[in-house]
Length: 345
Image (cartoon, rainbow, N blue to C red; front, side, top):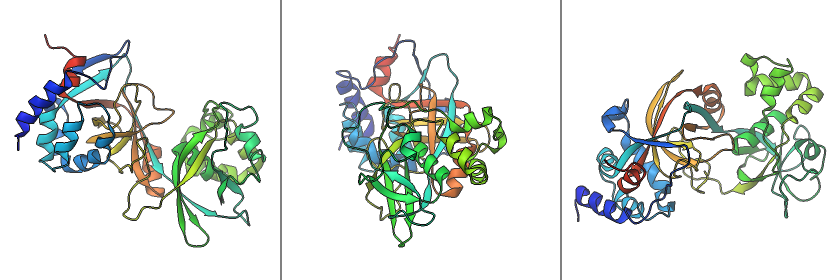
């Protein structure tokens, strides 16, 4: 078997022929070094490698194939990343922003009965972009009722609303079973933050603009609360996913399970899906760790923008909701790609 150094040279030679990442206008690429990554020596690189392996085979660019093949042999994780990848800072004139997301758990029923009145819909057939008849308000008022699209009914309109924002979740049914749902599409209307609008209207203040705060306000003001949520005309449709049997996370953009505290959502125009990304998040619960870009999000725009997946349930939701911090993200790119973007000399 070839040594890691020999394989690195071979990957570089093959990679000269093609690249998975192309330069974007107005974007700068700067190579840095591992000794410049704050906390790099103290991370659990093996955990990052395990997450990397979940989606590495889904990257079609030829530079990645030999890396994925070698990674599957379970080499020393830190040496693997340091040997085959170059840290690259991708940045225009913008500041980094880290936010968080999670997989919510909702209480539900397969039938519209009792408190379970809020449907979770599958995507309609022949859905047209930005259909004026399918705004959130019109759907809430029955535009899709009785068409066989109801996956389940949940007991709280705010929880249903945040399920749309997160894009996936688990619904614990009255019969004792649990179904997992994932993103299947949307109605094409522009996303607008209902929470921000509620703050703007003076319905809640900034400190109470959390899931719990909004839920409590809507329960006290149900009619006005539903209308406030409908300020966001965007509506997400779902599909049933196979239940996991080994604790796997929800499926990300590459249709593979994502991993709590190791997967992030990125802007794929700048960051290769499947690529390792070193993050240095400041603020509360500062974080220095190697993540894998395995998901996307409608609000995740720009080369220094990432959404951290915190896991499932209430505790993960609290951590995700608290996260809105600056810092820095550095993408680890195969040698050939890195030096194609940042030519030597």
